[in-house]
Length: 456
Image 1 (cartoon, rainbow, N blue to C red):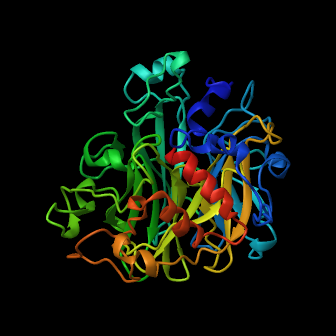
Image 2: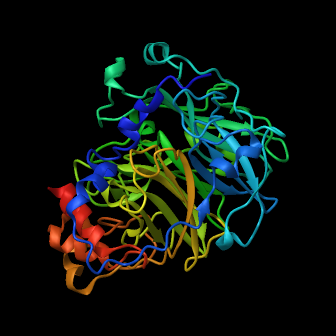
């Protein structure tokens, strides 16, 4: 089935925060003198790498380690051809398995979910945009968020159901954040050993297959989400953002006992009660743990992992590029954003994902790129990048302005922000702060240019 949005979906995929991913175009005149030479990505993970599974064009690649030790990566809108325009074989999501431990030499796919040809993992029908936009619960496509393998062997996957890609020339209606709209985030379950077949997750409290987080109330903050389990704890921690890319929005957090994920009343939201006290509460509030870099920028797709005993978040940080932030505990306190890849290095990038086989000092990231007018004009897929995710917390000269300068767990009763407030710094200090905490391959000139372009 042809992807009905064609190339127009790029209108919002490339615009994670207004000017965001088009920032590479704004930087045409930025001086590159003294710039760090970029080492480039490790390898392409899709395209010819996935042709043997029946597809070349796809994106995302959210990756989880299974209880068996190998990993499953789930990809979004997938096509036989390298690019969506006129594409056949439209499926979403699809899954690939991978077990090689030497990922620094390149991730290698072992096989796919579906046998010889990667199949659409979930039972649903793609609807045309008009139907999806106007009939509750009907979707253009189901885009994967994440999956997790629970201690009892069950797999849980979450997706968001696209109501509207917000392509105004085709009658689309943008979300209040200016991007695509969703009907819900949906849970799916597989009880099979290797996650071949999936069904909607059953809600034990209503005795229905409706473990959906409809895009309303507190659940609206978890339309895009990612899940981890913390060692020696019974909880699944779920990080989330609003539908699409919500300008000025942030990352939220809730948790639920892993064996109660199908009981809605068991979910608890992490938030500040308004008097400065953070705690887990069944009725909220749900306070952002990490904010967008500015009111006119958005945080893109997020991914959470546990790496070397630390919670690691990776996401598109507005126009600044793919970043990581780490904490000693799922609630924080969070380190400074560490820039891993910029839009100058990878135009129209989004959805950076730290591979679970990574270490803090040697991390491997899966980074998607949308079709763009540059030299990569035929590339719609994911590439592997290497880097370090060891981020700093303090900056001596700016400590009084950042508020968060310690590396310690944020526990119930904590007062104040749980992430450094670098967004409040003057532009020159933002540039210094971000430049002091970027991967060695990232050009400080690029960080300066991107920051000035966005703020300008």
